Image (cartoon, rainbow over all chains, first blue to last red; front, side, top):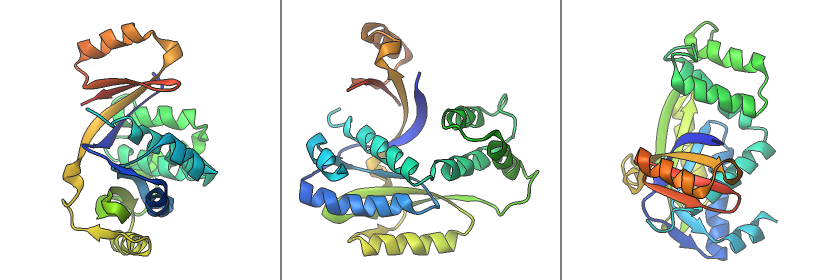
Length: 56
Length: 175
């Protein structure tokens, strides 16, 4: 077993195109970066291709 | 049951970000401190034991781990930590759940509210989006460790919700 944890999973997800993904991720990142935040759970869905583009 | 595999991608992306920012230790430390509140002995405290495994895997120095445990049990002085959940919406109607551990609930609430506002989102009252999520256990197993059929058998026997296979990892989702 590699890892085990309790997590919050969205019941449905919202797919994002690359324009929307950028702005949602910037909120997600800002929240996640804040030191007191342990976890951010979200219901968005970003395709692999868009993820790869954004990670550059 | 569709579209579940994407959130794990978010988890991986966040994991990589955490490492870049050197926040792995501080986050783990807080979690250990919280878990140790109910008992500093990993033999009796399973949550703590799981966290210690995680910490060892992340190469967290033993000293740091011990300090976090002591802060939780009260052996070492520290400000009281509180766990809070904040909810909100982002652009495009995305729902976000933010788990926070802080020494100052008011300061954190104000900061989170301003982060939401700055990024075209809004914080929402408790309960507005929490119902959109389900608390689940997630276990990851390397594909190389076990064959898919064997794992499927174990998973079904244990009554798990779902088993996903993805590049390089085999996931198991348990409710």
